[in-house]
Amino acid sequence: MIKLIATDIDGTLLKDGTLMIDPEYMTVIEKLTSKGIIFVACSGRQFISERKLFAPVCDKLLYITDGGTVVRTPHKILKVHTLPEDVWHGMCETVRNELPDCDYFIATPDYCLAEDAGSRMFRWLTDSYGYDIREVPDLLKAPVDNVIKFTVYHPSACEEMCAPLFTPTWQTKAKIASSGKEWMDCTAPGSGKGPSVAFLQEYLGISPDETCTFGDNLNDIEMLQNAGLSYAVSNSRPEVRAAAKNTCPPYWENGVLQILRSFL
Image (cartoon, rainbow, N blue to C red):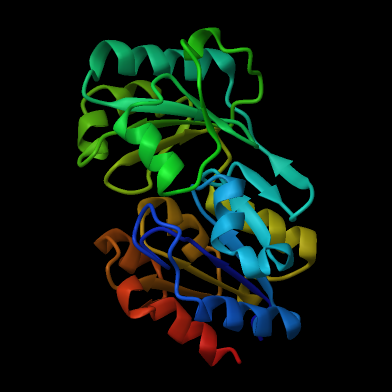
């Protein structure tokens, strides 16, 4: 019997970078939680964005946010992973010096910081994802000590842009994963959606065989492998479909919703 459901959001439930989701998801999630099934929003998004997306049921969910660096209830943080300052400072300098076509931001558990409020990235995060992202003149001088994620942005080919230098330079000091064609998320070693789902399983006393997960991108693979029942939406990357035990229809056909209905 499934007792825990964890799902990615962008590319899995809906088109990347939107707060528009089929309202039937709320109806089905309400019914699932009333049956005692725990539903977890598990995304690279920040907490405020996830809450906005699931507003009608937001107080009934658990949350894995910012690429698996924070695990929380609606009201308190259960677990958090932070990046060492020297690591994210170095990443920032690498992008500035070697990737002039890319942008970047840092995340804390409650808000994000970036340097240009007029940039395409900043406007997209604010207007489409509903982020709390704030402008600072220089990230390296920002008074912040709880950075959980450094993210590189490129409008169409972030993974490819990072591949020659950025990823080889930092992959031994951080966990680096593509979360879409625009994003490369860099988090602390040991963080991620898979470890966060495993933490919740132990915290709640729920086994992998009682867990169902959904995803579409490389940063979802661990949590798909760590569940007795797992689905990659058919619009996923091939590596993700290979990691999941099952495939369901793409997000534009509400493939996840179809599976969720079956649990009722």
